[in-house]
Length: 478
Image (cartoon, rainbow, N blue to C red; front, side, top):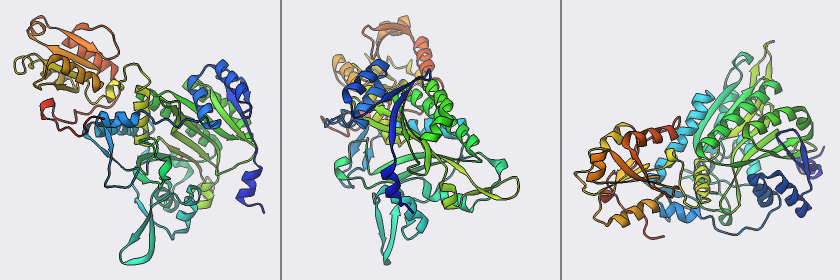
């Protein structure tokens, strides 16, 4: 019998781009000039950047600009007292983290109606099933020793399957209950190589939102797969992230489910990069990734879904069918992507712009108010508070020019200078990030514009004191 290494060694791949109209563009990755020409003709910049970065391994040793930006903006920083790849979150960074998690919760619990669970962060390394699941990670895990038994070893979780699989192996459920969707948000740990660590792109500790769907058969499974895909596309669109869609699929499944893949391409309004495998390499028959492209043309995986046709039988996850017999499920493994990597992608997307800025709903401060007289000109701020607008007030003893410059350095979307004339006229001169000219609008118009741009997205209150004079400085000049 062939072992897994022999099987993988004999698997052949062919590569193509599947266009929204159903046409296929074959790619010979050994011919870079031809590939670049084909990708240029297709005209999808994310796809082009992904193929050159990942599939053709273009050299890029540049440091991602977000590494300095995350510190300068006082979002995220290194923690010298911890291990490499573990970070601290400052208040505004934690606010962005929480808003992204709220958006992920909305997708998982409300739109997909997944049930939420929680399972342990630490597992017995002597457990056979845990070791089997860990084999594909090539010992990239933390070992934990306990003080009363030096021979005993535990590992910190590096994926969301451990507790979930144990839970559903013991659960009783029938075909009438399927599909079952399960959501878990957990901190995970992977002992990545030191040289591979890179800001928020690759860490050793991160927060992973996973959704697993247990399905009756291939037909139900592929419908769940498509449903997950579309909701994750909604998530990326809401965050303002452009992405390349990368599909790995066994040849026979590609032929059978090509129309379903086309449906997904059309939903994303993007071509698919497809690797067709001659045989099944792992437990999945189809998987895809959303690959975001950073400001230095590197790629990083965000969301992924794997169509698993093997693991349920291996780990004893069965449902009771119409004949009261046990059957293995089809499992859709999926991860929305770590919150930390989404923050990385958001920052890198912002840094592609001439004037960087976050999506309005994610901006820690949406409106910066600069009053000419602090006490006299702040009455109107009550309306901003009542309407759920994140605003703050630059009440520092600084010149007006320095206050405006600080707002620009912090990527504040709306900056208002308020004096007697503005209060009397009810019209405010507003500097809007990304626009050349100032605009004069009323407070009602400003509130309506912000609420329209943030419609349907999560909201949280400001993370620190609304007065800049009362805020600590966490990071000096970077």
